[in-house]
Image (cartoon, rainbow, N blue to C red; front, side, top):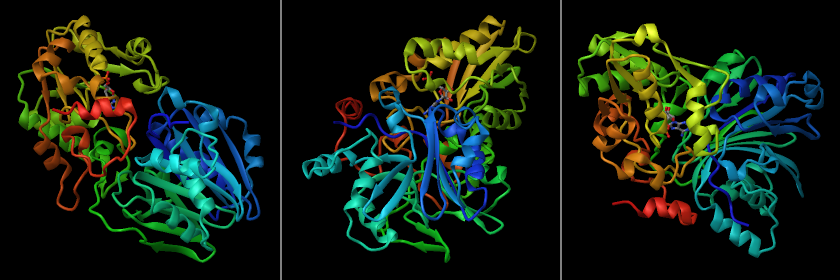
Length: 469
Ligand code: AMP
């Protein structure tokens, strides 16, 4: 059995030492819903046993029945929200994964993508392991179960030394919660505190909701063990230069979160300012593609002095564009999600700011929408460089073939999306806006320079990668 496409875009959250651990985890997952809308789950520990509830669907639906929380007793809990591509959208792949093994029970929640998963899996299967899911996360379970080490920390470390790629992990045993961020620190992870309880979350916005204080971010390569002795930190892996994902700032994380040392909103606004410095356009209005384009559009407006308006309204009850698995439905999805405000747009020269063009279908729809609302001109500006390469570390970008900018010039893309002009942010401009004084970011989606090699790829992914000119 082969793995499906990578573990994409997930959010993890955990609480240790709180009488309402499962309930707080539920709230935390609510705040992380933007990181995954396909399925979710919570596993709690009462000190003796683990208890789980998980299913396909949004947090609000999966935990709709308040009675569920009576089945999740105990003072510690971990949770997961997951989004992945079609092939793996099945109930057996819903996280956290929970297993019983010789040492008791353990639950795991994972955000990221393990790039050597298939290699390890083939090896484990040759030794007789039987896999129940198509998730790369399951290899960690098998490696843990095989370890002869006596402490959970050592078993986890032993398992993870073999694993390469992007992972933020949360483990829950009967008595301990362990958080791990991979040595490159691709995905964000932070530690919070609420009274005597400790909290771990993918993004700080989840701490805010439950009124927990942000203590600090978990460091790249750090393993944090939380148990009755408090919080203990370890750095068991070989040190490498950290490369957090720049796309978290550009698109994925919530603007109110504080990740990789900065507030996401402020970074996006600066990207917009830089976009204005690099792309001067005569226009009457700047409008964002909501929601992710809003801070960058504001930054653009402030830097250029061009008036900002909400010219597109978003229906918030529709999920992100990528949720729909088929091209045909995605076309429809944009319309279902956005509607122009005619009185704002009519007769105006409009600049529309978005954070990225992936396949180009969304931008094309948006330009047509704005034009049909009576705009005199439509100029599309993107607050990031062209997305030329797929991500193998946990952001859902399609294969190289499907990424419009990998095979088309900017002028060709402009024609396709039918805009009067199209401008991107330069790589240098993006780095300047984000600020690289202390950090070297992974920007493989823009440059094709992948910080962690992937020993094995699906034929589909190889096609995308080796087309690199
Ligand atoms: P497309 O129609 O494929 O060009 O999609 C572009 C839109 O998708 C933009 O409005 C982005 O905000 C959004 N987007 C970019 N990257 C992702 C991603 N990894 N997952 C979901 N949506 C994305």
